[in-house]
Image (tube, rainbow, N blue to C red; front, side):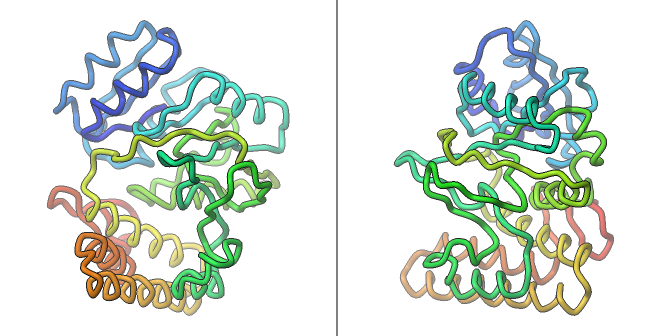
Length: 300
């Protein structure tokens, strides 16, 4: 299962490392604007679907519901798993009925785990730790985990970047929450898993290289990330707690933006500011189109 957006080059490289006959479903939110359809249809078991800019959650669910396979593996276009990685993750959910999801750790070119490969339920203490940067010294105190490769770690949710799940379990849990255009759908899926007595496994011993760059502009993604977190908090936490967590995170990202601006890191400062604006307003756009409005409670 792959959700694409301006991702032809990334998807082409991803598929080059996988068996030619592997069953494949791609939902393209760029509607073949970059010629991705032919790349997919050239594969003997490839299915191509136009997404029409419906965002990640709805597109991923569309791909999943179109499949009759027993197991599904969600892949981001910029990840580079091989068939051994995919097999390992599928075996986890195939052999343990209480394991709803198994995910690998996406690493950068130096072999270091990326931030947000998994994490914990957002709470006010965790938000404060993240806001002041304490999570860097004490990684298990924050919201997002940044594990050492091979380090055993129990988490509340895992990233959907490279994630295996039994299809029936995915459907029974309601799929990804379509209240989210992108981001926090994986946090919400972890919450659903726990509510049904299931757990998600983060395989820190299974690493997947990231080529970096999804095709979407970073400032848009930063604001979307903030708006999705705001939506999640107001949906699943009491109003006072949600507001306190949003405020803490918003101040943290604003402080980071100012610090980076003073250091001359202008683009990173703009990314942090976009994240803060998304948190506070719960609104975000893609290519000038409003796609997330927390006041409505669903993607636009």
